[in-house]
Image (cartoon, rainbow, N blue to C red):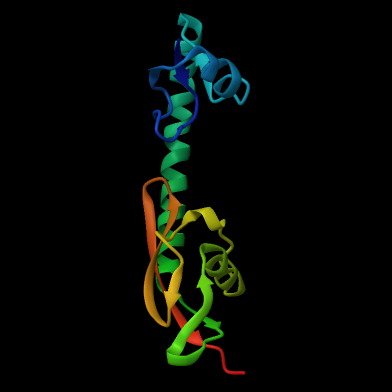
Length: 149
């Protein structure tokens, strides 16, 4: 089944693209969530009108995301953790922990936007990538330090 995307859908296409998808995917996911429309002449014209408005909105969102990423890149987060002998961590530091530390500094982010390949399991500094926007990422320095109890 061919549909016209109304919004960007990861691993499928961008707003305004005509894509071929399984009928069940379109019927059960894309159409009910207003992410796509069936391909008709009327819908093509409607999407073309929406595309012009969406492009302007997209540029504005991207410029705001770049400014936010610039501020975020200047932040350094310190996360204290309990350690055992030889500075081995009890547990690990996950994207959720990084999100909480950033929230304490005034940056509200969803933990799924923090791209950690695997949890941090050692004391030290690490650069963590944060996906602020589809096309904008920021690097944040995360320091895992021993908890001083």
